[in-house]
Image 1 (tube, rainbow, N blue to C red):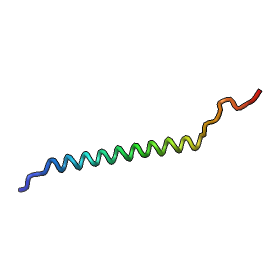
Image 2 (cartoon, rainbow, N blue to C red):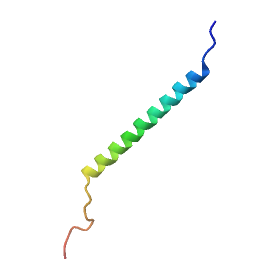
Image 3 (tube, one colour):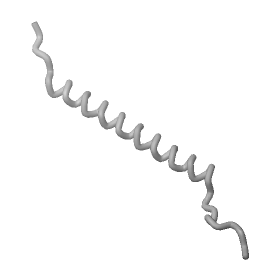
Image 4 (cartoon, rainbow, N blue to C red):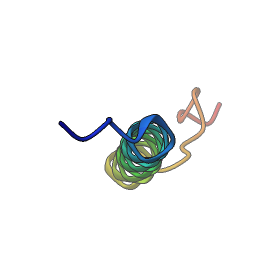
Length: 49
């Protein structure tokens, strides 16, 4: 019976975690830009006296 290659398994898990982390960061970035597009910076007090 072949022995499992623990280094390969560990590397695959690390790559999977890295990919997941990058996808999460990308979603956060997209969400942040979407919110800023919906609500552009507007002055809070829009009335002039």
